[in-house]
Amino acid sequence: MHRKVTKAVFPIAGMGTRFLPATKATPKEILTLVDRPLIQYAVDEARAAGITEFIFVTSRGKGALEDYFDRAPELEASLKAKGKTDLLKILQATNMESGQIASVRQSEALGLGHAVWCARNLIGDEPFAVILPDDVIAADKPCLQQMIEAYAETGGNMVAAMEVPADKTSSYGVLDVPASISPVMPVQGMVEKPAPGTAPSNLAVIGRYILSPQVLRNLDAHQKGAGGEIQLTDAIEKEIRSAGNVYGYRFDGRRFDCGSKAGYLQATIAFGLARDELREELQDFLHEMMGMRQAAE
Ligand code: G1P
Picture 1: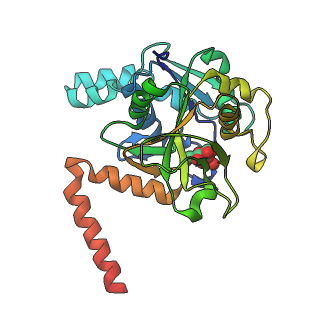
Picture 2: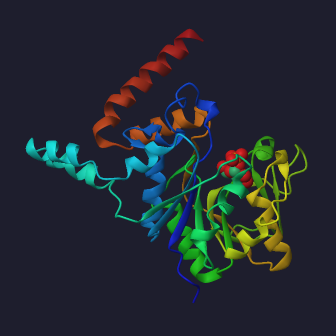
């Protein structure tokens, strides 16, 4: 029996420059898909997977993320007084219990590996999950929950994986795995942002990880990798070489890259279409837009 995973790290220190000016005074993770900020999708996915301790790795200007999960007594009282119980319920679902969220600062942007390493004292000597809120995954069973179930069999370390077109592999961590159609794949190697034409496969790492505390120790050396940054991929690759206990997990679901504008807009449309109260109006609008486009061509 492997030790239960109860802690998750959310690296949210990035400046979100790709979304400027929207992110000038608002953290990127507060950007909203329909009516919920990106960070809430990430936290809800973790909760569904049994996570009870949430570690935010933040930087200056991210206070709104902590406030977001706190109680809002005046707002709650006002909704209660007006009898708006539905809204009150929605609001209360965002409240976290006292002490459930801890945050640590990453005072310099040194890379994803460094961000995760910043959480080391709160993680201690147990396995933990990492969720990158930019990667939003729509799935019947939340992605991290799928992974936790697979991890119950494998132990070790597990990274979410997805096939991407060959000309996109240089934007990701890429797995070297034996040819297989099974969802769980033993990983033989891992490379961060391989130069075009050099990727070991087209299986890209997506922002969900279950990691052993040894990965944190591998990060102690602060070794720089791709792009001059301290890479999480390199610390996991070290585990492949020393312990050989890293698995790729081909998840069931659709991933949206909400770190890019096109991916964010696609997610907005997909999550809008998934809502009963919005579907029809949105579908009509999309048909209209497509019709206009065809007419223009
Ligand atoms: C990070 C990881 C990369 C992974 C990607 C998934 O890259 O370093 O291995 O494939 O997230 O979204 P970033 O997108 O931060 O450059």
